[in-house]
Every structure is written in C-alpha cells, then in structure tokens.
Length: 476
Ligand code: ACO
Image 1 (cartoon, rainbow, N blue to C red):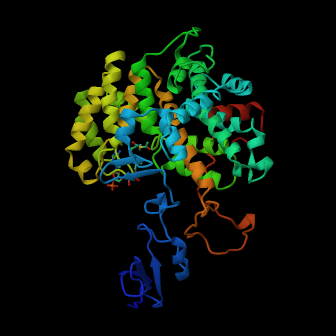
Image 2: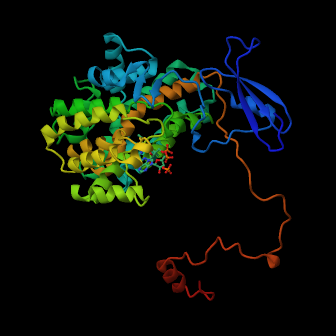
Image 3: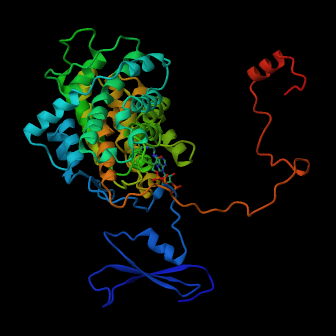
C-alpha cells in the first residue's frame, strides 16, 4: 500500500471487528499509517482525518455536511422535497403558509387551536416601529428592494436590545420566551417591511397591517400592498392563495446559501436580526434567490420565441447562462418548478397571460432535449416560472426576491432554532489551503518594484475635474 506519491487510499472495511458498523479505512500511502473512519448516515467526520494531518478541500461545500438537521429532506436525483417528512406537493395543495411555518418551526403540523393561536400571535407582531418607517422613507425610491431589506433587518436588530446577545449575554436565547418573541417579530414584520418598501417605491402612503381581523397572513400582506386607503379592501382570493402557495414552496430548502448564512452568522453569537440581514444578503444574489429576477431580465432580453435557438447556442458556448436552470442539489426536475408552472396559469386567468411565458416554455422545451443540458442534468428550478407569476401579478421585477425572502423566513427561523440546540455547534470557521508566500523580510521603499496589480489609471473624469479644481500641484 505504501507508495512514494503522497496520496490517501480509501478502503471500505467490513471485517469482524467492525461488524454492524460501516467504516472506511484510509491508508496514507507515504507513511503507511492507517485510519479507520466510522460512517454514520453516509457521513464521515472531517476532524477524524486530522489524525493523518490532512484537511478536506471543498470549495462551495460540494460534499461537506456542516450540520445534522431534521427539518427538510431533498433527494436531488429523484426530485423529492419534504418538510419534516411531508411531501411538498401535498403541502402546496392542502396546507397554508402559516401551517407550514408552524410545521417547520415546531416539527409537527399544528392542531386547529395551535394554528389559530400561532397565526393570531404572528399577526399581532406585524406593526413595525416608527424608526424603521423613517429609514424606509429616507431610502432612494429606485433603491433595490433587497438592498433596503438587508438594511432594514439589521436596523430592526437595534430596536430590541433586550434580545441582543451582544448586550445581554450569549445565553439569552436559552430562554424559550425570548426565542419565541424573535420568531413572532421576524415572521410578523417581514411582510410589513416588504409592503412598505413597495409602497415607498411606487410613491404611495403606507397601509398599516390590519391585524385582529379575519385576514390571513398573506391576505394581510396583499392588503398592505394594495389598499387605497380603504380598510375594507379584500384582495382577490385566488391570487392570495397563489401567493400563499408560493410562500409554502419557498419556506425551506435545507442548507442553501442563505440558510447556511443564518447558521454561519448565528455561530458567532450575533443577534437573529443581524443573522437574517446576512441571509437576506445571500438571497439577493442572482445565483440564489435573485435568480427569479434574473430569469425575467433574461426572457425580456431574448425578446421573442424566434430568438430562443440562438440564445441556447450562446449558453452552450458559455456566452450566456440560462437563469432559472440548474441546481446544486436537484439533478432532476425541481418539484417546486412543476407546481409553480401550474400556478402560473391560475394567475394568468385573472391577471392575463404574460407574453414571456411563451419564451419560457420554448426555452424549456429546447433545453430539455439538448445534449448540453441533458448531460449536465440541468432542469428548471423554482425560479424559472415564479418570476413570470410575479410579473403577471404586476410586481416590479426588482421586488421578486423580497417575495422569496418572506417565504423563506420560517425556514431561516427553523434552522436558527435547530442551531441553537445543536450539541455539536461551534463557531463556523473553515480551514484554508494556504499557497501564498513563505516568510520574507520587509522591503525598504527604495528597493521595491511595482507588482502591477494596482493601477493609478482608475480615476474617474469627475474626480480628475475636482482634483484639478483645487489647483493641486502634482496632477493625477
Ligand atoms: N446555464 C448554463 N450552464 C449551466 C447552468 C445554467 N443555468 N447551470 C449549470 N451549468 C453548467 C456549468 O457551466 C457546468 O458546466 P461544465 O461542467 O461544463 O463547466 C455544469 O453545468 C455544472 O454547473 P455548476 O456551476 O458547477 O453547478 P453548481 O452546483 O455549482 O451551480 C447553480 C448551481 C449556481 C444554481 C447553477 O446551476 C446556476 O448558476 N444556475 C442559474 C442560476 C439559478 O437559476 N439559480 C437559482 C438556483 S435555485 C435557488 O437558489 C432558489
């Protein structure tokens, strides 16, 4: 087994000694050192490999589990998604966003008494403090809504010093009541912040939440978006149901980029609002939640069904990316995309069919029979059709990801709770594989050569104008 090349040799072991236990034997081919690793649920512990003096290099966490979770199950090859064991298809059809939020947070479907109480408590926490309203009003009207949301969540954290571990100690979240309060605050205020950001954008006065009435969570959100100073306004029930179902579909997706960010930030002991601000930042990106917006912009750019074949060619030649396609985990049709596609037609019946749907379906048809996409197992993901629904419902394109953020809130919260109780929790601190300079001595200024990496050319004409205006002797 010993070889001159530094390599590790893995052997699946199944002998008498390890009977009933799945193990893997690793042999360092240079030193001959052997290590038997226990395999639990197809997982070995990376720290065990440290005994051989090696670390695991895994950019993008392609094959690294960073926690044990009991919330959401995905089988990417089979296209299966379950929250707490319940198939997403059943939840989308039979459940509601509040019910699914309860399920994700507390592990079981609520009784009717629990659901009523929980919904009532969430709706009693929908008011936001005036200082948040003032901050929204101070943002530019053309600010990207997600940029504002990221700021608002961080700002919201400053309003609750009672729940801030930096002020009141790292163990405050051990209190079930304090945890519960933050859950209600975040679930409750997320739609209000989103609606106020929308109303500010379109230049209309804000509608305060209509709590205490018979409106559901999602109906209340649509009321805040759309009521024209009419407290009796009721949004269309089919559209409410469609949006509620979209929230259900987005509620959790195990360790995606933003949920991993919640856990990562929480590991430092920071307050949950700041952790959510970081998560919203991760969601904002076009490769994650921002993809629904990117899909829409892509479809608009393609412009016509006739241009689809040329666009597909551009994707294959790596000149473009087919947004809303591909997924780190799904190597099959994303089950959420199937449901969203159906929902889109229900929305079109009320709001009219968006012409971009033809381009989207033609793109899908072409991609699903093309070798490039088949070989790479690229299928539509949830964002491929959700943007079309949002567009048909008249939401501004840059507002789409905020709708995703409302839906993802219970998932982020469920992972926050699970993390707080995780006996294995440790501050998230990956290792690096250092390939930089060896130690070297400080070089005096007169003996240095430019690396060429810093350019003195990146100065704007306006900056040159200003600098010259002050009659500086050394011109830039
Ligand atoms: N269009 C064209 N090619 C693609 C696409 C795509 N959308 N997605 C993946 N590929 C190709 C890659 O170029 C790569 O090809 P190669 O092996 O020849 O180099 C191969 O498929 C594997 O792709 P990776 O980028 O390695 O896959 P990864 O798991 O890292 O990325 C991701 C997943 C980011 C979602 C990617 O598929 C993508 O960029 N999709 C478009 C953006 C998108 O829709 N994001 C939303 C995801 S769902 C969500 O977050 C809610």
